[in-house]
Amino acid sequence: MANDLNLCQFIGRLGKDPEKRYTSGGDAVANLSIACGWKTKSGDGVEWVSVVAFGKLAEIIAEYLRKGSQVYLSGRYRTRRWQDQNGQDRYTTEIIANEMQMLGGRAGAGGGGAGYGSQDLAEGNSAPAPQNSNSAPSQPDQAPAGGGNFDDFDDDIPF
Image (cartoon, rainbow, N blue to C red; front, side):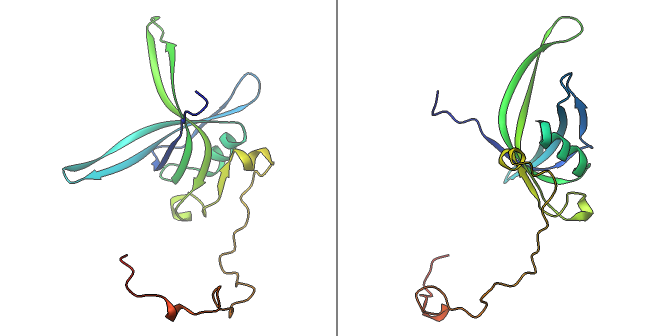
């Protein structure tokens, strides 16, 4: 099973504010549900995806995401079994998030595109890093690699 892959990626909008709680050990857990739309020639629809995040990612999700926020989430698919009050076995399918990217603008309460993954969290990055999209390149008048210019390219590219 070493070559198996369990990876799910979604872009959607939160149906409600994330719910944050803590385990008995003090670790944060965030539960959220995102709506992912789809379209085909015969129609369209929405799938609701249940997502759970743990630790620092859960804290960030609970702090920055709100109902309607557009978000990219990546994680692994998990089905777990539990028993209801009557002792009946129930099953829940959810995505265990390990990476999140806020999409959209501030109007959607999604933020400015800062992303968080397991690598960022392991390194202690817990706040959005400022992103300056207005910064100019250090050498704006430099010619493309190879010494040519863009007029030398072939115009018969099929795309």
